[in-house]
Length: 182
Image (tube, rainbow, N blue to C red; front, side):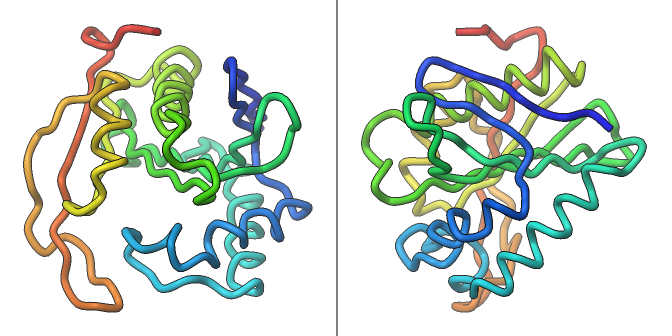
């Protein structure tokens, strides 16, 4: 089993554990933090179930799902969650997703987080392509992905079903030969 620990100047990434449930609920249970996600705010029990599934997925061989706690480098507090899912039918490619506690917004933390995910995927996992999909209304995610070096590929119409109905997704990606480790 590959354990993940990746540190940057302001953030770190590590595998989630059962001890993170309350901190992750502060993100997954917050209406503001989940406003662009394809689900309603989650209950504490739902977050505990997600963490249990992530811990189980970390044991899989080959490991295809990485659910990571986003940790403030100075205080070591969990301030968000990141996800990298390798596509079984295309093991050179992975999808990323992330969410931060609203108190972290507006500080460039999202860009730092995307950069850490890209470095992990390209340097440690040897991926060729990393992509992410966002709500068209999620301009902070757009800025984070573009600033981190991803390019906007296009729109997938009615990509995900949300509590409010079908939602389009805007896809961003970066290839290993165009990625610059900043």
